[in-house]
Amino acid sequence: MTAPHVSAGGTAALGTTEVHRMGYGAMQLAGPHVFGPPADRDAAVAVLRRAVELGVDHVDTSDFYGPHVTNEVLREALHPFDGLTLVTKVGARRDADGGWPSAMTREELVTGVHDNLHHLGVEQLGAVNLRLPDSWTGSLEEPFTVLRELQEQGLVAQLGVSNVSAAQLDEALALGPVACVQNSYNLVLREHDALVDHCAELGVAFVPFFPLGGFSPLQHDGLTAVATRLDATPMQVALAWLLQRSPAILLIPGTSSVAHLEENIAATSLVLGPQDVTELDDVTELDALA
Image 1 (spheres, rainbow, N blue to C red):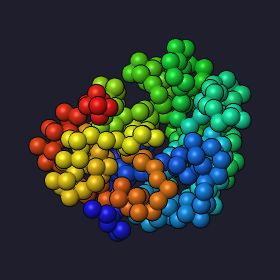
Image 2: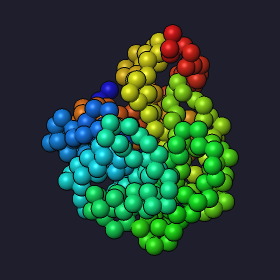
Image 3: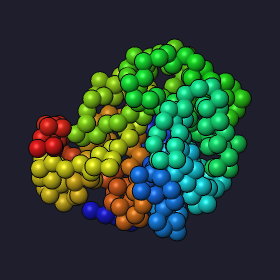
């Protein structure tokens, strides 16, 4: 069901900005394990330019992808980013072994924002997500306040949070406006079901990372059965399920292939019937792992 001339679907609010619901995640433009340069830089540039041709106007990135690699490729392909909302994240860094240690101090957060600005070649970032380390138990007040200060300086247009609970989102909201939440969520991994609904009630965009399973692509007999019936690919069906799941959801699937990009964007025109949704709602993580 690939279609080379489809658009990136309807629009929804990303804070005060209206964007197409199908965006693009740049993580896969870096090398293996999101470390080092891409195997084919020209192909990476081509994917980004094709995404924009197809209507993508929301790109997710981070300077710790590579590190620096995805932002540098983005700059080469799309600068000056006319009409694009660039969303990045801070709160982590990369070490020499490719690890992901946290970077939550004031100095690290300020440096992270400035590094993104520098490598993208922009004066302001469309949004910056505060990405919390796993099992974070501290208050968000200090790190979120640091980002609020950078926002007040005009370096950041909007703020978001990532890898958070509902209580942490509410804590951030008490400190200032939150444009988006970026958590792991897909057809199989639904730990944040309640948070998706909470975001919709609040008018906060929910942006799933790993919408297709990340480094372990989604696999499930039920998903395959629905895809076969609709003459679509399983990944298209998984994306369509997310789009119908909540009007608050914005998608950022990543790929380094133009063909796969076109396939992903074609999912915006895929209509799931009530029976399709019922069958997909019954998919569980346990079934997928069996």
